[in-house]
Length: 309
Image (cartoon, rainbow, N blue to C red; front, side, top):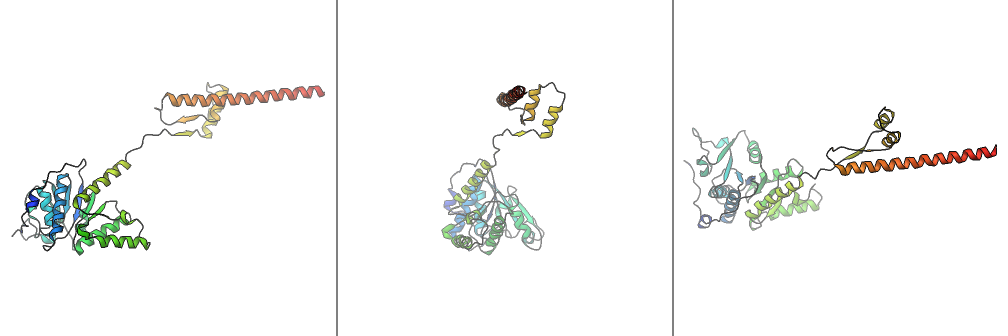
């Protein structure tokens, strides 16, 4: 027999419409699956599911029909969003395509169930975060903490850069925040506590933080304006230029040897060409003055020698 979760409350039935986000994200969510979960936590879970749906994000979770899982799935469904549930094959009901403990929203073809295999929960954990853009953690018990700290550890040592935010309803995760601060003070962390886990007071704020995180990352990754790179021609090329039978003038060949700049970008334009010509002219002028000085010096020396004779 399929288990049906509680009916929506009056508050849930009057949720407002929310504007779509410019970029849809895939958000993995952890939270309690206990039927004894306090209402303040399930209210936050419903708001999270509804907000993700209205913003156009996909909600990925453990597909549960109780606790924060149930409320989140109900909220995402009420918000007309996409839900992906990940459940272990051990919960397949014999002789059917249904999963024991799965939420009723997965009765329809609108939402998707992914089946994890194996004799433990490792594959299920991987499937939950596979392709995710962010992780939101609601209040939960040891199972939720296990998933949270595994992902926090992986972020801490650099295995992923997924943003992780805990919905700190009524200070539920204050102790987690404190232990990170203590570990940092005792020099046990490689990163700042905020770079490992982030904390927000509400589900809406948590979603907004992840969206802002990705918007900032996109700004950082925008290609910078193309820079024209200049480099000196190699000494071998300069010597080849001077020794070649080209139609360049003697001064031109000497100018090349002493350092014409070569532009790597053929589209640099007339400004770069004028700059190159200006440098070449300055080089030629300098060499000309040097040669003239040498000539005058030799002439003076020859005159002195003649007088002594």
